Image (tube, rainbow, N blue to C red; front, top):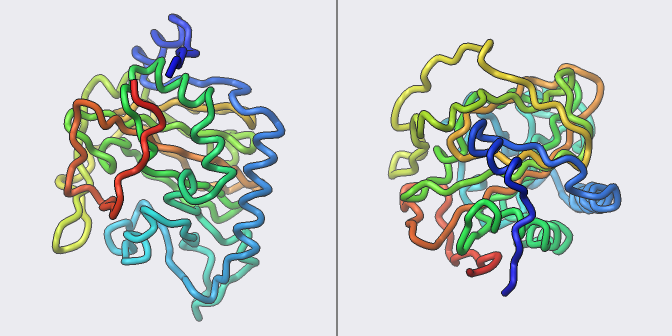
Length: 283
């Protein structure tokens, strides 16, 4: 198929140099509205009495369960740590209590699948050099007002490892992301130092293969963006976000892509699929 890359030389140079790239107005206002309305419907249909799985990057090893593992090929719902009272009851409506929905929206939901496999998305991946890319993980992240949890410094290649490494994060702002409501922060050029550690799944569960190194917060820069902007994130870039202490949410849709041409998916990744994902294209 005749895919044409949509990144110019200057954009590619910035991405290769700094490890991330902001593409303003990547999604139209209609596309943003469509994704948000679709998530509203999914939440309305979700019966929270059937699940109380909590997601936390601070306590990921202890909160990971079968519901989390099976979400690799499903649309699953994960609550904020601070959503429940001491008796285990939600302190507010489920719409304001969910941390994220994942991890197969790009496969199982028609609206998210259409956007994730759109021509502008495949053109972007073609520009980045992908030969046979697959969407391996997708998440709708709510960053709820007041309780939206911190995401600690990490690299996407730690969780979605291929040999050689090929992961890229595609982070679409569905609302304006600011310092106040928990925007992304990154250490520019940190991807050049390579992968620090891996997140392993074995017979004991999931764990990192080594402790996190210390990071100096002065090295991070905020990535404040308007709704519709796409942040392209190199798989080795150190990035994070802080708790949302504001009164406004910070919705985002995140898609992670890896290549399947000339590289191998690690069998000890947390994602173990029953069926291989369909490639977005093959060149």
